[in-house]
Image (tube, rainbow, N blue to C red; front, top):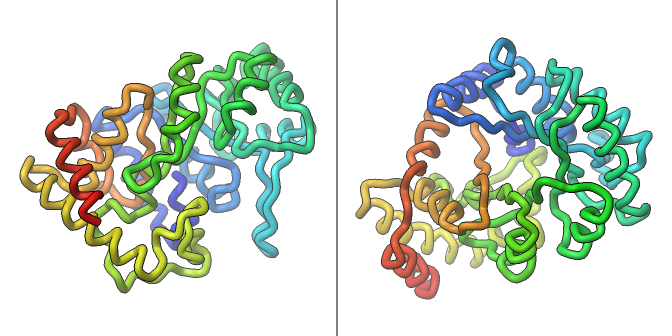
Length: 295
């Protein structure tokens, strides 16, 4: 339910997509308090009404985002987290969250503080597990001194492999779960994007930069789309789509637990679910690397 900052969505279609996902065996649903300024959680709550026991619900807090001014910041104080959790539970229409993540590290206070909040919430039954998102190796190490965080959520896809340097090895060594966002490179790997793509002003991709990478800008976009075309040809040779290829590639990393993808409509989740069970061979991965080197 994180699609709400990718431009306008149709709520009925999003809810139908969530129901279709569950029908296809998808059990984990990820959102955050700031997605759509609360609308993501509200739609998830409506989508999971009567089906709560069939879903692993993940949400994130500790992130400020003022819609009117677009001002952003991180606040992992006990007061802000407590207030945020109660609001999230209300929007999600549930009395507990399976996994609550600190959305971004708050470097203005000790990481001990949010970890102590996690411990209290777990004792109270408000969360089952706690984790982090976008934390560095050293920041996760500090958190682990105070609470057994379950996972880290990080950006990772064919066009962004920065996590391979430190984050993934650290998580593997510590036995932490890994949830990857941007598995489809924020739309680039859906196969539907063209050189003429335009983003709405309320779409976070509007500046054409994705987490520090100018993948949607000018010549970078053109070259990336040429690479996507080569990947399409590889996928087609196996009876798959480029999106399915991209998801399968992320899941081929043994440290990755969950490859997150956004959904707007049932057809999208039906396509994405088609990546399940596809284990890429070394030869297939070599073909993909060759496609990148050609670009």
